[in-house]
Length: 353
Image (cartoon, rainbow, N blue to C red; front, side, top):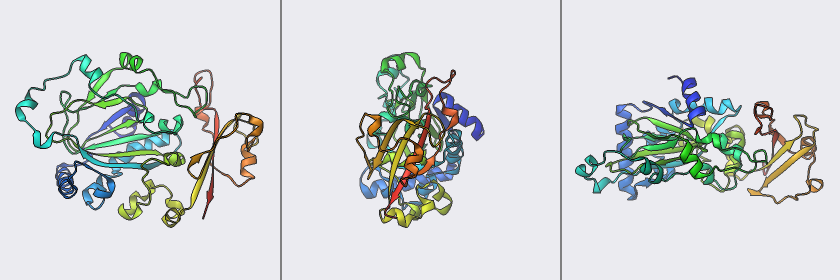
């Protein structure tokens, strides 16, 4: 499938498999690099900082075959893709305790196993303090260095479960999380086995887990991407920043703040963010909701609209804020989309530049 076809599956199913991201030689190089670092750090879970000196790990980061689909995904929402978090690499295999006979006895999982033994969750619940629209435009890439099997160690997903997430009454500010039983009862619980060198992309709102494994190795790289305009919502989490020196120049477009220069990032230029839900797409329109982040902390604003600091996007602009995202008209509420996000303006204010 081409990148457009892969995008359609990601949008509909909530996940997609990208085959042959790495070739056979690249897989061997990546495995050897991983094992060198395991020996050096005496750990099976390695951070980006521990891995970034290895060329093969850098090569797999923002790999062009991944980014062709991720770029298309973010473009669907009229956004640009940014690498917001690199969770390094890990081996979830049994390694030294591997028993070939034990692996041979793993023949499959019952329906109860699929429901109760996979550790079901969605990544939106892990990210504290972010809005639902952030999760909507976020995607994770799992790049596998070893094969997995439907009866042994596979990623598993509740197909289409991201459709059960929507902003409940607050137009993007407060996530709605579906009832677990309702979701598992009504979505197909699908194991997703992969070959070594393949990748799985899945949306932050897609419920997923991992089936029990008796594989000797289950090594993979984990990268998370979001919309550039919403990167700052990752403040307080494991953000990926100030890494231009460790990635080749052609990948700098996926690093937040490149257009401003990394020196400004390192010297502490701060970005405040203002979200305004307006009555319509005009800059002078009144607002229905507002939230503000200053110095990386969400500000406690009055519930009384008369006490809000601004009463229109234009008033905020006149006070030094700059619009970085205008309302996406495709997300407006209408008869066919009653859960639309309305006319949301996102503004920023930089200090320390």
